[in-house]
Image 1 (cartoon, one colour):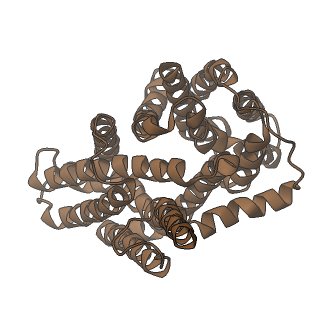
Image 2 (cartoon, rainbow, N blue to C red):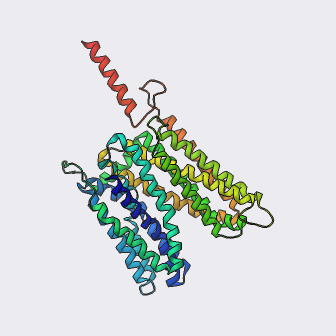
Image 3 (cartoon, rainbow, N blue to C red):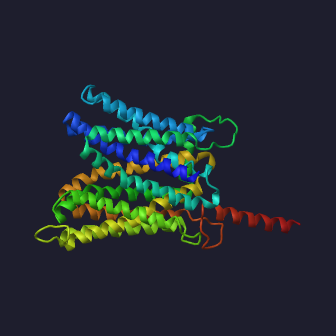
Amino acid sequence: MIARYMFGAITARTGDEMSGPALLVAGLALTGSPVVASWLLAGLTASAAIGGPLLGVLLDRALRPGRMLAGCLLGYTGGLLVVLLGLGHVPDAVLIGVAVLAGVLGPALTGGWTAQLPLLIPAGRLERASALDAISYNAAGLAGPAAVAGVAAAWDGRSAVVVSLALMVAAAPIAYRLPGRPERGVRTEGIRRELAAGFTAIGRNAPLRRATVTSMVSYAGVPMFVVGAPLLGGALAGGAAYGALLLAVTAGGALATNALLARRRSTSPSPDTILVCATLLLGAALALAAVAPHLAAARPGPFTGAFEVAVLAAALAGVAEGPQLTALLSVRHREAPAERRSQIFTTGASLKITSFAAGSTMAGPLVGHDVGTALLVGAALQLAAVGGYALLSRTSRPSGPPTGAEDRGGQARERWAATRSRVAQRALQ
């Protein structure tokens, strides 16, 4: 079952990773307007912030959430197909509106799919399953843009969109067959109240809250490298294509590291510790990348020391990003209440997408001014993310459990409360 899940997740997420760049290339080719193409991409991604929490509520209510995921996949592909067929024939504003509507379903391909893992895997194996699931994100992130480039070069941007749609349609039957959850009483809460309850669940759970804030601040710094990579490749190696190589090195590093994490023993550091260490390493990688332009030779080339430093920084960024994602997913699996699991995953995915979008708006002007400065800002945001984690850990430290006990989703507090209860009962006997 897990093998089928992994195949479906990688297929759906590769199609998703292809859809944005493919739509951008197709929009530019068929309309001739970079403004329209960029607005299509922005519409497709911006609405995820709205769709994530709502999708999570509906998935948590569904007894067969896999069927709803399949519907979301088909709805997303249907929206993109309408945009593709309408390019050059339908008013641009209408197509942008369709892209916005399709983007609402986007979080189903990320957090919504991941939230179904506990229906497949026993609780004791969730941490390893989270590492495997994170591999599907990394593999899709590596294969998706590369597939767009290859298909667009061999045929055209329209064909790249068609391939991405075919991949997502192929994943729909697998999502449809995902197991359901046991029957339970009908929920009487309104959707608005459930939406509020989902955000409250994240806000009141200390590990969830600090992991969410840490990932959001950290992810806002990632676009500094993503947007700056083409310029870095051009300045150090003589071509923007080498910037794409840097991004591929990062994705490959994340994939390889998560493959190793999937084999780690249960005695390894907790996901909370890995999250902090990975964020610090990501900051160090971005700082190292910021040094590379100052080492550039008079004649740029792919075999210069400056570009080799950039490649090393990209590899370190991948080694950090892979475990960071795995740790974040593990914390969510560990902490999320069963009745709010899908909502917490899709809401978390929406918040990360929103943070990335916010970081992208800053990255453009900063990279245009100086790529080294932009990378240093990205490194500073990683330090800010770790600082936020430390601050939230200090303000949310439980008073009951013994000193040094780790708060693993309230488990330490529960054990301490149970101990006090047994002591009190013995005292009364």
